[in-house]
Amino acid sequence: MQKLFLTIGSIAMALAVSLGAFGAHGLRGKLSAEMLDIFETGVRYNFYHAIGLLIIGIIAYQLPDSGLLKWSGWLMVGGIIIFSGSLYLLALSGIRWMGAITPIGGLCFIVSWILLALTVWKGL
Image (tube, rainbow, N blue to C red; front, side, top):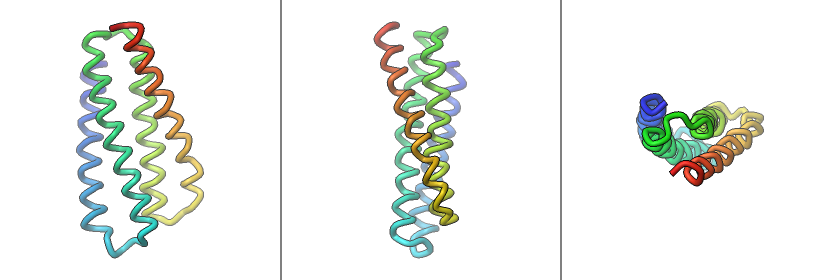
């Protein structure tokens, strides 16, 4: 679990940096200010939760058998995919209904952080 979440977190960080650069240099002038802001929100939350995955991976060295921690990690991965991914797709495609699934990713993030807090409270 440690290596997995550290690896996924590192890849998510690389993706956030790449997409941030793409947004700043490749999309400026091509998207409306509103759509560019939506894209940047996806990048920002991708960064935050990639860091969260790295934290989960580090904590997993102390608590390798924690089911709560494993759920926390997978919900954070799901949140990145659903929350940030839906915002990327919305900004790039203009398909408005994509914004309707974004809150599902936000809920994944919230539950993930709560599970991480419970893990730390119970295990460290």
